[in-house]
Image 1 (cartoon, rainbow, N blue to C red):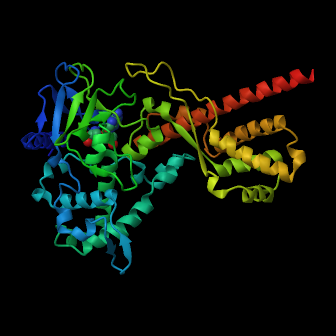
Image 2: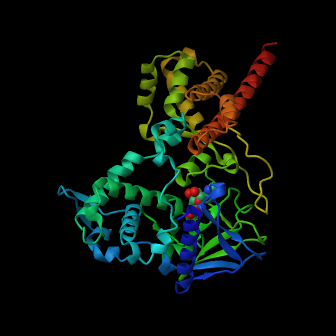
Image 3: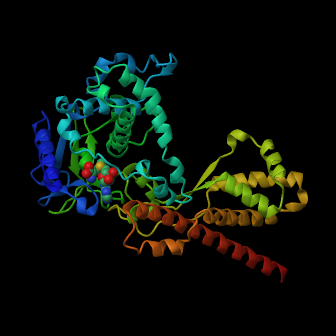
Length: 470
Ligand SMILES: C[S@@+](CC[C@H](N)C(=O)[O-])C[C@H]1O[C@@H](n2cnc3c(N)ncnc32)[C@H](O)[C@@H]1O
């Protein structure tokens, strides 16, 4: 079957299934569309002008896939009972599955049921492949260069969890997980990866009843520590997103008692895409969770500065051996020392229509990094008083250490900002390499802005020094 035909058929079957759900509604003013030409899968557009506050569609809570609606928890009560502990195949006692791994297991169960699952038509419109770094080759990952995203992919940790927690449950309940006996361990691990990535990009954080009373807001999954109730919400997750909160986001999902409702936030013109808001993510995080990047999210870009970089810059700046730094560290409260510092712009408050008055601005280096360097300088002063005779000298050193840290960090990216800009002009880059270059370029841009900040303050200091000495 031609790819386009199958794609449309799946969309149509999903829509018919959705409309047939008790309590569901889908407005005649909207339509699910094929946005593959924009690399955005399916989306929803307005087919006619829509006023503000109109219900676009409604999803009965019973249609959500989670621990409350799937029959799996009742089939495997011991596995889902969060109060008890489980015994793994080696006889070790382990805590029960958290909400993240529970939902992966439920998704695997429902997927393996095929036609017998009430969510079959929904699974047919969920992705089989992802562009997130979890599925990239090493050479694609290398293109991220020194970006901290590279260390956040977590493939081996996820795999270890699947192997130690999910696989034993599936293998010891083969009659529950349909056709699982015909699948190899590797196939099941692959399926767990697929479901994990689907949850990452599609699942919603559903408030518990108590939370709902306190806070009437919805949210995409933020919490990965297993505490929140997560669920896959058919139709709500067909909405794509754009970056500026309120400005481009034109729909909102309200979490009601019996159902979730998508409502228009403002008038929407016929032909416009209905957009949700995924959050103020830097492109690196957008890539990690959703597998895409956009220029708009560049304003939220961040650079992580590892303490090791600042420490190296500090030792070099003062020409002190590593053991002096170690001696300082020992005198400080280790619990209070941070390992990583986040360089980020002040994105500012949006105007009343949700747009931003101007570009986000980098105003200073991370305050906690400056404080930690100062704490070390204080320690060094005790050991080597001549190096830091007064506050003026300390501030000078602090500013040089900041600048050197940025230079050191920048040198960890093998290509320059200019080279990356040139690279992006090429038309033969794969989607993954292009996204990786955009992520690292956004970080380099931020490092440059930070360097300019320190260079100008060094110049000012130098100016002041010249002024006082004349
Ligand atoms: C919740 S789903 C939205 C529905 C999705 N388009 C589909 O076809 O199933 C999130 C995924 O949609 C895609 N997406 C959302 N917003 C996008 C955008 N502005 N540009 C490109 N892709 C986008 C990304 O692949 C993301 O992982």
